[in-house]
Image 1: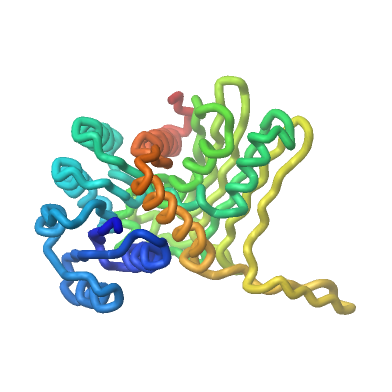
Image 2: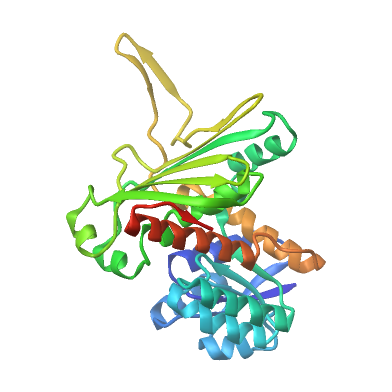
Length: 328
């Protein structure tokens, strides 16, 4: 039995705790949060003990930690957990600074501890299916990848101010997905963006509507579109065009019932929240973490995957500021 400690008992910590409860061979042994009530609530639902973050990391009975705390705490927690010899699962982004991620990579390597970055969308069955078909050669050589990601509503301005910006907070998932589907690393990034949803987002120094083009050395292209608003629900679509055909993953709807009348055809709405849309993916990634840990197998996505997505986000932010493409 692998004993797991949860660092951060908010929304994402609760998601991971539920996933662990469904994965055989693992249990939540201890939880920690800066807010005692959050820790107590999660402990009550999991049977775990409540500890401080320091005590949880030092607990000899805890073999792995799940870091779901605010991003600005990840650096110190990663260092402490690595030095304590714990396996680490860390939510994206690993850190807002690429240089600090490199420092985290160094401490993880020095202590030879397993590390997995929480890019849950790799474990969505639809996107994983597309990748497997690309690798099987079903559509020949990949030419253009198109990724659409739009939230139903923007987050509070207080969150925007500390988020690191749309590229590091929201589109970083899509940067990782681009790398997941392309056969090469992007070498050039060009970004445009505007504050069209809420002027207050612009006043906070961010944009809420953005598009980024990634280009690889051989000329493969990835187009990414993000918006903090989608009146029709949570919009998550991917299309990959290749020399022999096209693969496409559509939105996941509330149900599959379709009605046709004289007015036309109507389907159910899309799922309206990321926790619903990616519930199975969150379970899949945690199962992969526990299984790899149990068998001593390599973990993926790695901390280097976290760094590479962050470097693309950094380049997109620079491109938006300068109005020019940025080379990676």
